[in-house]
Amino acid sequence: MRHKILIAEDEADISRLLSEILEAEGYETLRAFSGTEALSLIEREEPDLLLLDLMLPGLSGEELLEKLREEKRCSFPILILSAKSALDDKVALLKNGADDYITKPFEPQEVTARILAALRRAASAGPSRQQPEMLVYRNLKLYPDSRRVLVNDRELSLTAHEYKLLHLFLQSPEKVYSRERLYELVWEGGYYGENNTVNVHVSNLRRKIREADATQEYIQTVYGIGFRLG
Ligand code: CA
Image (spheres, rainbow, N blue to C red):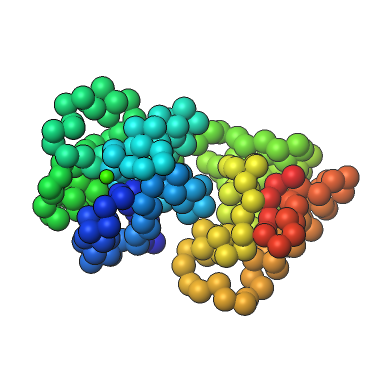
């Protein structure tokens, strides 16, 4: 799967340059031109890495970093982009929230090398570092290590796609996923278009859960948007 990199940089030329460099290396890029825009893209798109300029309108890079750290949403590496002169004051901040920094002006090779290194570190630290032994929602328990799902202590027999869907919902119980987003995350690529795949799998998943717990619905349809736990 292609890594998705969010570029938070308000200078259009630099943003475009970074995007070209990274797309040429095979990354998918998203661009935000203010801190607030970056925050909403993080929510919506779940990037694999954030390239963050410190001097941003709306919410500054420092404020965004702090916000992500406070809300424990730094599950992806953050690389700071900064002019060399501004860097000295930022060292303490970087230590607390960022993974690395790139000074402007930068060489394309330096940017791609640092990104590659940060993504490798993140991959080797792995999801296992934060992955809990068990996710619980009402009468449902999911064990990521063994990929087992129990409802009322009865084991469900799920397909790989059904398991992945349920795992996603349990990881972010408040989150509403669109069908397109679920398709992207669970089927990893391909064009969603008009197909009905997600609906079919969600309804199979519901049926299997219902067979073990008929008293309540675990996956809600959010009209016009998609699905969430609830
Ligand atoms: Ca700037």
